[in-house]
Length: 229
Image (tube, rainbow, N blue to C red; front, side, top):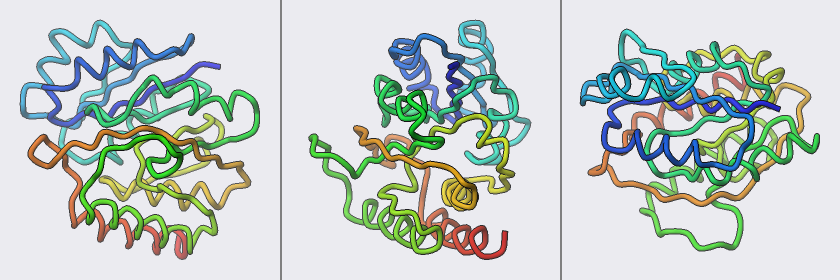
């Protein structure tokens, strides 16, 4: 089965080449790589056009900065794979874990797989209390509405069978995309798995973009898309 790797990109000039090297080095036989530039202004857009575009399967250039949710939708629209995974353009997530993330789908045990930063007994870097607390709160509130016992709704690594993703109409522009897609996926008759992953969180000084406004919008999205969608 072909894997489509969707990579939303916004102002990642310092990491985009390295994450692409890691994605291409991941042990997956049949894979396409799709980049969506969310109107970067730090030189990323020029780097994509001048150097990177010829080395990947597709680059989509958005005409305005709209957010991760919009970028993911643009990537989904042009993906041709049987399985679709979301990959951040920074270096927080490890593409070498693609095989373990897609295995439950390949073995026909799952239709959707989330990579959890909070599962497993392996070593993890210590992250800020409020960052972890916020993720826990959003996940627990989401679980209350979806009745899914998930441990990490806000994870980047979300993997979908193409036919499942085709049934979901998405609207959120920014990071509330995560609870929205979880809410809408939970309404389908699908098998959901979680797989433990490693996570190397960068700081806001290093370019992390999600903030308090996004946490508030995430709670709103949980209520809206579970109760009123």
